[in-house]
Image (cartoon, rainbow, N blue to C red):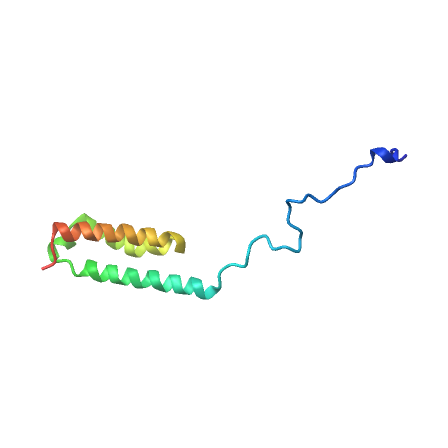
Length: 105
């Protein structure tokens, strides 16, 4: 048995919803952009490792030296691309502190 016509519900499209033809997001940045950011971060990492290696022998015994090396190697590799910049900034800060404690000779 069918309900009377006055009680039939009609599904109307909601105006604030996207139609299936509209993309949910604009197309992601091209792969070249990822590669460029990856290469820039890798170049900064290499520069920080060079600064850390330039520290004298006394600095190499400091626990901060080992922590900076861990940040630049293990932690850097473990993190996603978006977090790697923060890891490099933390390592740079730690290297700055080590340079102030034991200046480069």
